[in-house]
Length: 198
Image (cartoon, rainbow, N blue to C red; front, side, top):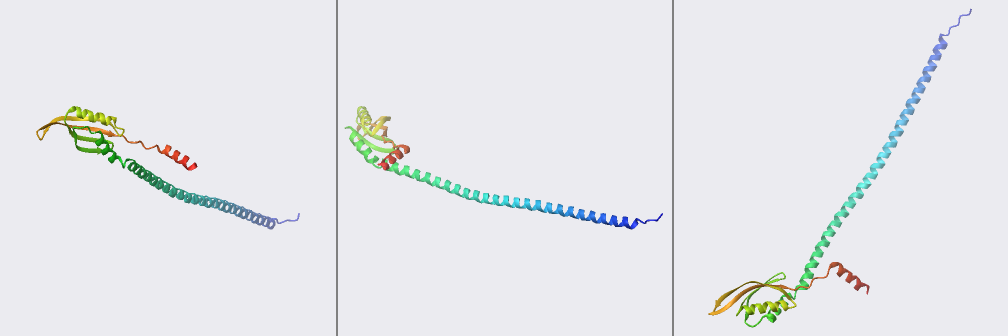
């Protein structure tokens, strides 16, 4: 039999298998690294995109917050202007009130009644004076009741006093001014709208 030495062939085969293994291992590692890099790049891009959207939304939210603050300031200014308008309208509607009150007091004052003081608080008027008799005070209250500008007279007190050796009755009474009620804002706006159409 011819002796055959297979050692070199086996060594070459092992070397070839080893090289093949390292090549495959290197290919697997490279493929894995490529996959990891691709996944990392994809998610990094997604994160950056989402961060960009978040920054955009935060910017828009900041703009809206500033606009909301401006709207609040405008509402406060509008409310202040409406309050001023009401005050001006009230002053305009009541500017002739004092003249009308004095005129009515003179017109409704019966003979034998003299006024000592007049004090107005809002629509309430306090009248203090002297009368020659209780009947004169009753007449004054009836006159106030009949006046179109005065209403709800109420006697606070009446007492007998002596002034310059003359017996008089000092009275204290309250009477309310009749004020025209200002039109409702909605009704006024509706009337203004009708006027602008025509």
